[in-house]
Length: 430
Image 1 (cartoon, rainbow, N blue to C red):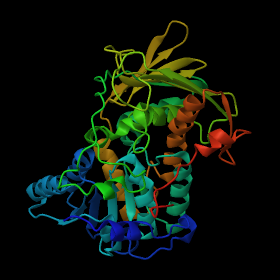
Image 2: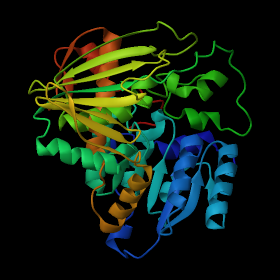
Image 3: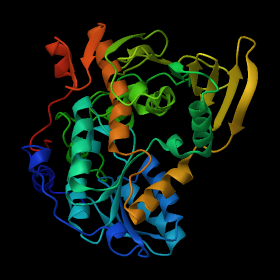
Image 4: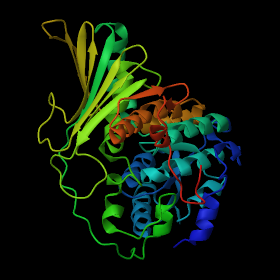
């Protein structure tokens, strides 16, 4: 099942001049033909998170899992067996994602690869008129978010970002409370993650990639380098493939912080500071980070993570506070909110419920059948993913940076602007 790398990269590199050059190659869409049809779904990367999502989708009777794609043969075998147990038959298995996109019978695709592959695959899938469920963060660097928005709009495909708390009944009810004015005007939101992480492993020597993995295909647009077990297993700790804590897990709480604050644009100013004060081992990111974002109207968003903390904040390892002029709301993507009113912090409305996964999957499927936008569409994804990207750039530059939301560029800082994008290993460009 191994790939011919040159053919893989040749096909993956189609449209290297950019998204504007990518033309839709199919016109089928379940929502525009027969609303009673089964949605034929494919999944690209069916490792840990991908396999979990696959099982979530397979549980729906109106979904047929037709193709699985992974450059890791072990992942394919495990995931195919999972589907067989649920659906009664194994789907087709391929190693080259382009074969999925060329299959005109496929209506929708799950993308759950490492972050560096999200957008290169997604823009090609959108051009092939595939509806997309893209794991978070949808973009690996800031520029990719705008490309996703443009591609989704051009090809009129359904796009769902994997920030599932958007779909929770808890979020729905909390939104009603926020909109009611009970808390006054929401002036500031704070997001946090204080999940304790184990020490990062010490560096290990490069080695030979296992025979069940097409390592060149796994690298894809990332810089060429020899296989390293640590980088492969802990890929989110390295900027070549992942986004660290703020983008890998923090995006969930940041997405809710932006939602609760009610902002629908990018910030105008950002600053961040972080250090390695506890975790030992090899990684490209700090083990604690505080980032502050200012919006044009003066509202602010704060993000904090502390990977050394064995305790929680206000009872939650991941959470938010929405600060209003009359009260505040404690909110967690674990499925909880509680309001506190006035100077005495008297308890107001609150709720416990789900973390939204099942409803998020169903929202995606229903959007395909109805041809309506998802609750976490490409624009929502770009505005939320942009926050970790901008915060990471501020951390790396050590500056307080001014940002132009309309131009999507930093003001008078070309070094920071260069970090809004990245180099792609030829020929995988977007």
